[in-house]
Length: 191
Image (cartoon, rainbow, N blue to C red; front, side, top):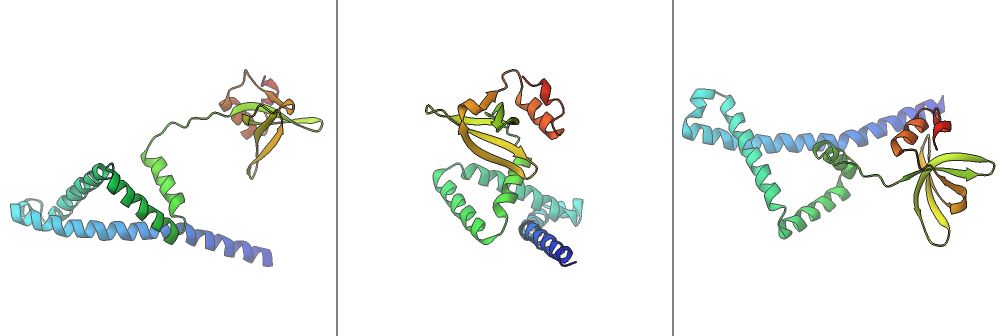
């Protein structure tokens, strides 16, 4: 019973740590958009668009100004001075907001579609009398190899003699990963 309450407590803490940066981001967006909507409302009144669009004119011009501002900031951050300033603010946010870096990386993956380059080599690694599927990360001239062995908790990294690594030359990385994900089904066909 005690372990159940401990798990509930841990889940609640994890949920708070997940929601805190998201909530802060939403509050910031609301404040920033409110500022730009107020500014956009003034521009809409000045040029007479508030009579055409009604109360939505402030939001429309606010969103338009915000998009232009974001574009301008994207252009300015390419300059060295603004890049250093942005990196400095980013470092401070990492210190102050828990989970900021993780959420920033998640957002970056959603916004920027970068192809993932994988250099790992599909391999079988010998442990005693059996072979375990994994990936050769690197090897040196002294006969050592760094291997990554996936497991249910993520993966483990080992340094082993290169003689204990059998490279699967005819197996693609995708095929080996699919076989590992399927609890080894199809692994015997890997060569």
